[in-house]
Length: 181
Image (cartoon, rainbow, N blue to C red; front, side, top):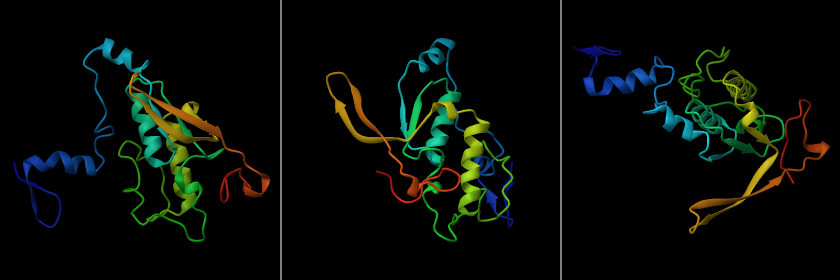
């Protein structure tokens, strides 16, 4: 069959899967499918730590939850998610079309701007966290200070610390402004 996307240019059959994913027609195009119930049950006991609750960290948390993991992830911000919470300069926004700067499985968010400003992107990431119910997996105000690989056990050792926030750095909605101590 001959496929055409736009401008009368044919798409090779081998490329069709890519374009269907890009169009966001498949809600979970890369989700993991377990071969058995026993394998899925093992995911709950497999420890995973995701560092950061930005767009990619939230994506990882959602995918891990869908795969059956009970993993936790941490973010050094104290009340909100998304790297954009720290980018509060005037006119901050994404340089990609808002739909491109979103997850294929989370396209129901009502973006109001073609190139969404910072506050709208923050609302999108928060919407993802709440819609896919991963907020309980986030440890707010926790910073990873060091990672060490322990060869004998085959495990990572992770040093964490609580982020202290003084009232000067907290904005009107409890969001951080500037650095943390």
